[in-house]
Image (tube, rainbow, N blue to C red; front, side):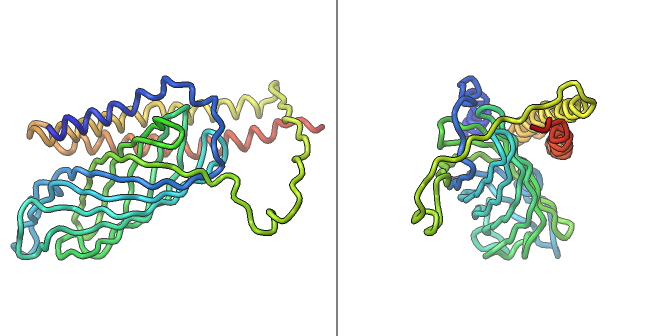
Length: 288
């Protein structure tokens, strides 16, 4: 039943895109605080791995929170820095397990937004605290978060995250809810003391839409959106398959691992396409 609720939350992320939130103004930067729930997958959940003849007990779920700083370049692109803590609870006690362990990730990400939806590939390092399991010390971390703003400040998200350390790989799918605080409008003491003057009028740039550079930037931009259009559904399908695999043994872990892995790679491939598109677009600006 818990996994049915989990799946319902995941599918509900698609509904807010119907609202015309792309007409609203967005802060140039924001700080979000939220709660997260994780469901371990594969060996991390079942505990089939062994080390020095001691069996890993497996883990039922993880509960934690996250803090993220997001710097927006414009309405579509942004960069993020995220940290937090997630406590994983074991299925049963074992001689080398003392009530689970805590994972503390530090990740950087690139966020792509369309209306209220966003996709965010992330990469970083996770430190494992208070544990005596196979997942000791720390590990490189990568994953993908897909979410939607249901209001101006509140977002729902689903994510996939994977660790690789010492031959022991672990992954989970999760959902989260966060509240974002706008940091736009914060000033230094010096700027507050100065008399505020209206900003000078700036003309919008005029682009030469007949040039080859304009055609090139449109091609790169289209490739970027195609990457997101293919990668995000693949990742969502992988997340749904991973949740379903927890209910039945007929789905092999390699299936959802391939779907999620391919989705993360294809979505991340959009980054260089958008960078090149921006580069060529700047070349088409006509001098005033």
